[in-house]
Length: 546
Image (cartoon, rainbow, N blue to C red):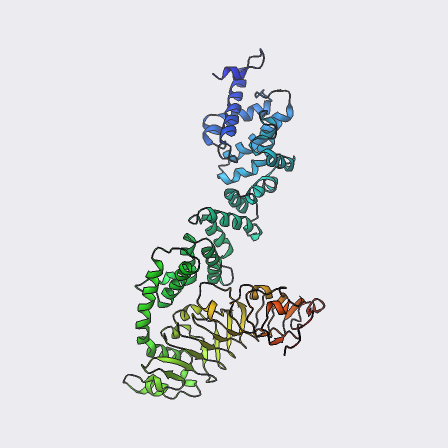
């Protein structure tokens, strides 16, 4: 049945020509009806077991007629043989499927020219012609990437996005992560359960070497979860709520509260049915609130020892109960501690009391009724582990100013926070805002002035908590320009951003801050290592401001 294809006119073919033409037409039929970017025709059985690879290689070398409309057309033969050599070499080298994409332009060049049934180069029409025009004689992976793979990714092909990220970038080059990002977003738009590409992007974005790796993973999965609820929310739960601590039988009460807030937000704000997760987490969180106060005495003891209590300026009550008394301590009379009528701690005020050492975040998680925490003007150092404050649902005011704290500053400190002072420390970054946290709606006053915050102003202001009234971020390294219209902060009364490195025009202040009463933008020359000639603000300030 193959003999008719082996004859043009009255010329019969030799056995060698027959084998070559059989292989050629087999390749063409596979491509014609199963075309999907080389994958169907890169078949080990076809190229090796059926001996078509060696047969076509020999035919190309000897210029054996292959069944082209005009076997004298050396350009057609050359196009096919160039593609065949690329594909056959890949098979012989035992390369994975992705490595065949370097042959893509060679394939386009052969197929579009030879297929006489398609005037516009086959199935792709005008787009395919554009691809062909791009694919010059300089064939190879680089050309295939720029002419075929990357355009297909941008045109919505998720598989091509993964190929682009894997094969069109040098190892360690994160500039091509954009292809994975496109593929990630498009895959979850179609199917919220299809997060394979997103996981690959997350692993590249949040490598172990990346600063703030744990926060990076939460920053990645949380907005994806809120935009496309599904399996991304399971990843967000693990990344943002530290589910490695276990659930119910040792989850850690901060984790259950975090999970409760996440799934409550999904149901109440995003209108996504959570299949019972909200009830499970919130019920466990409520149970833990009832029992957490049993550990208040133990956590106060941890606070004392962790901050070198024996060197405190005032340790009245603490020393007697912790070092001398063998009876149950009456911590409500200890210096700096206030309790409600039921004996639960509602205030810890150890301001300026010579507390030293690493900040003991773990020592606060049992104070379910704590309303005020003031550890300012001490010498506490290290980072704050904000996870432990997720269960402090009553904490309204926190002052940790004038210490030696560093790392990332999460201004959504605790679920009900209204006032937060982190000024005069060594924080270098403001954490991204997680909208599922209750504090996103409750925070009104924040001061992180006199730190080492080194970020773009737009990064800090975009998506900031909407109910802020007073913002103080003086004396940092905040750079860049202010957005022309600062949205979401219409309630601002006081805005201090003096002594930073801002440039450009002032925003439209009346539209951005219609209730503004106090403004300080002075001295944008506080970054001596930057070119001062390009730094400074210009524009007009409304009358009536102090």
